[in-house]
Length: 94
Image: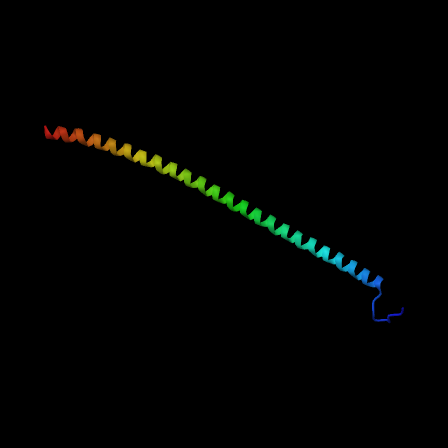
């Protein structure tokens, strides 16, 4: 049965179909690889952000400790100054 020059044979159709499936599979793999790269980049960015936030928290905790020590030192200095003022006032009152 001669189907003419422009009509593909069953073998040609099968070959085209296999080629289409092969190309389709390669495109799917490429898309998955791109998705994997994007996911890896996203994870890396998230890890960097978390590391930066942890560093900032540690800096804040260090500042809080410094402020607490300064506040305690100020309280102690105020107590000492008040204790020195009271005896001199008592002497002048006598």
